Length: 264
Image 1 (cartoon, rainbow, N blue to C red):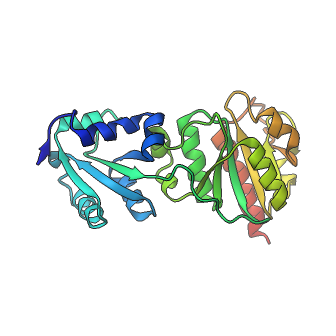
Image 2: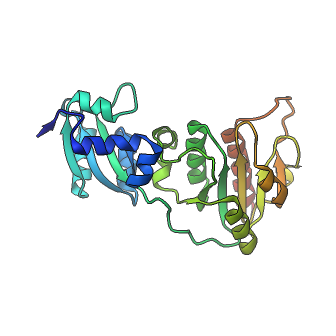
């Protein structure tokens, strides 16, 4: 049966996930495109429904995705191009949109004094947030910590920018005081990336455990965390630029930490 109405109850329920409120209440998000759906299928997340437009899903790869997801127990729902467009948040949908279950708060991962965490403190740009999640996954951080006033990491733009990392990376949604308390109890140094002050990155000691905090694109790290941090770290910029993009700064810091760990 081909669904041709955007008023279909399953379509309406899926479209509600376009909003942060809908994602929170539905404990799910929408994922578009072959690659991201493949990533979701290969992760521990559950694909509940897969909406597909038959006339746009003709390739062998798309057919494999349909068969794989159906084999995992997802409900396959054929829709018209008009319904697909209503479900999509891209200008030209690829032909596949999946409803993926994500827990509201993942179980707290096992942390120790040697754990590596990346903390987003008020990051607002979806592209930056998605890239931070991709970096945390790439550099083997055990978890990503999201503090209040940070963009919703389940949003469509963040998920796309993460290139599927959101499906493989544990995420903790904490308040600042929870983070400070947990790091103190576990003896994990809380390190903030600063533009104006701090020790040069290459003089820091990153071979052991740490929690890197990156802040808002305009304001930087919150005053509370800047005050209680064990150390402020800066990236020297001899060219004289005022600052770096938050994701670029995080990439440099995580690379240096990985380099130091490799020398042990």
